[in-house]
Image 1 (cartoon, rainbow, N blue to C red):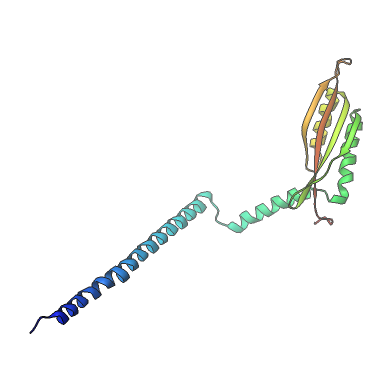
Image 2 (cartoon, rainbow, N blue to C red):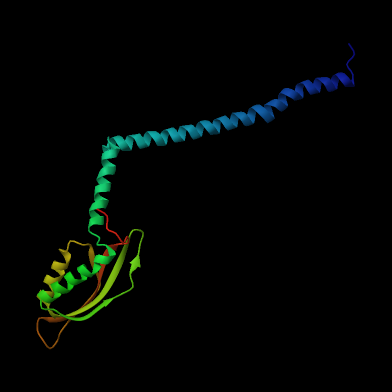
Length: 183
């Protein structure tokens, strides 16, 4: 057998085909499979962690937990007056101030602050009167069946009259954005 250029080229081609297949087919496929296996392992570990958390938290019945959250949301929504009922809450606050013999010097509704399903109606108030009566006013406002918040309070003692004070604060009343109250 004569070993010439053609045979040498044929032999090089025979050797190059498996080497090329390894470099361009099998090695990338192997790396891809390793990456996929690592991804599967990571997701399996996350799933196992989630299952462990669910078991450790005792959440056997997810529907029960969701129902509890729905009841909590319903409870807080029931504390939000409808937009057209906000004047009733304002009347209750005014009645409480009058009952405590507090002189209302300022009662100014500020611009409402809308949120997703509710709004906040800030009311700037200034009252004058006995400190103990003002303290009772705060306790009575806290007992209102609606969600209210007092913020930005400024108390000043009346230097001329012992036990008397001036109080300036912002009372926020939260109400439902919907025009018709559910439930």
